[in-house]
Image (cartoon, rainbow, N blue to C red; front, side, top):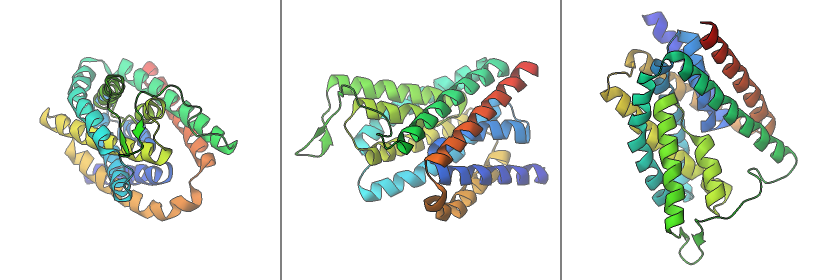
Length: 272
């Protein structure tokens, strides 16, 4: 049992380091690492993976709040709907067999890594990180510095919250690959504000999902607690290296690694 916990802490440290170097999106590797490293099922690994995602996002959100770049009203609105939707995703996860659940996760992982690869490529070419923006229903009031809340704006943000919450409960992912593109598409916020607001949503929704899993009795704290401690230590130790190592090339390396993990996960699910 102690050996199992030590391995869990070690895996958590790896994820913490990845999170420090690549951002909260790096937490999507937590579930495959738990599946292969500890032999957990998708349902068992998902809420534990959310611990790492939530911790890293929480750190980023606090830093964003200190700098005043988190749009906390939008974050609270999106997160509230995400927290409501997360138990539905958790319920669905327990009704699906492990194989289709793993295949869905693999597909989401490939999609997220493709987005990361394209974003890194645009940065290397000196283009806008998220491409050109379309029509935006949520725009800042230049006098107040706050988003103008209209029905189209609320509808767009509500859909984002529900989708991120469902994915959080179903697959154990923070949903940053949904929230960041949505905020970029629907608002005229700058990228620093988009990322910080996204981290605040991820932290809140992940916390709600972990609480839901605990209340449902499916959160394995014997593995989750050492994993969380390891993630925090890995995050703190790797943060000083982030300014030297982080960048588009590292993001591309992460994307390739993530796609490889998705293929292994799909292969394991299909071949048993």
